[in-house]
Amino acid sequence: MELNEMEKRLIFQTEGYGKSDVTYELRMCLPYIPDPVKRKTAEELMRKLDAMPEKDCLALIQDIRKNYRIPAGPKTMGELLAEARQKSGAE
Image 1 (cartoon, rainbow, N blue to C red):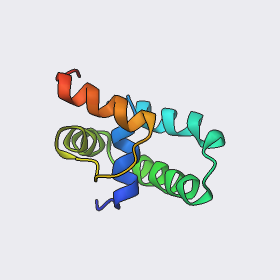
Image 2 (image 1 turned 180 degrees about the vertical axis):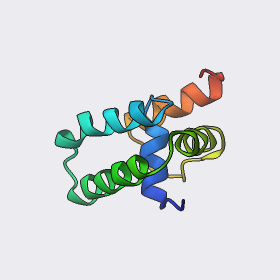
Image 3 (image 1 turned 90 degrees about the vertical axis):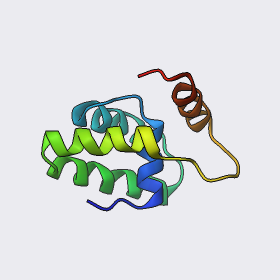
Image 4 (image 1 turned 120 degrees about the vertical axis):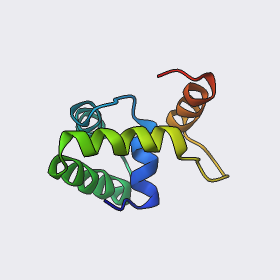
């Protein structure tokens, strides 16, 4: 499954490692996302993840956690925490 840059970024910022964890976290954050474009992207991402088998979704999430790099520029607190978690080698 192909994900766009913003969808990869959203997965990278979450703390869950399974399909249910990530979709739950996105659902909980959805009302607090002020940007309508990001909110729509999060909704579409949840639909994509729900349609995937658990095994494929887990592999996708693990791949993004391991290999995704945030492009240079301003970073949100979630991105800074995700980078620190990745640098420390924490699961």
